[in-house]
Amino acid sequence: MARLRDGTVVWREVDGEIVALDVSTSTYIAVNPTGAFLWPSLVEGASQEELAQRLVQSYDVDLRRAAQDVAVFLAPLRERGLLEE
Image 1 (cartoon, rainbow, N blue to C red):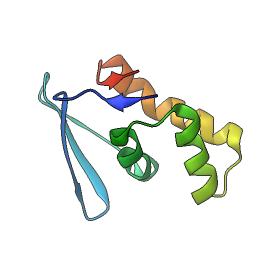
Image 2: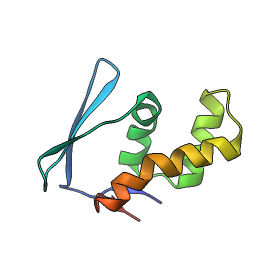
Image 3: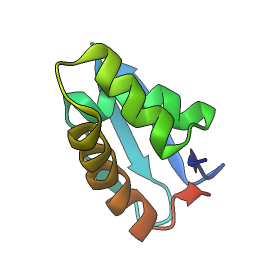
Image 4: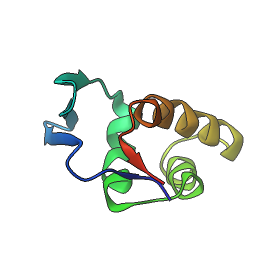
């Protein structure tokens, strides 16, 4: 399961986009439309597999591509230490 670590990110949804700030470095986190779709699930705590399944169900992609997209989305968050796993 992946979840944003409490207190590490301040975020809001504005007009369907995610505006997020890494609190420890005071840097903004850019999230593309796919990331904005996944963000609420990540906040709730979803496995990488669950995130990929949500992409498959909502977009015209196969599971392999969805899993790759999820890995790309999570990698920078993981590198910054923003995820609990």
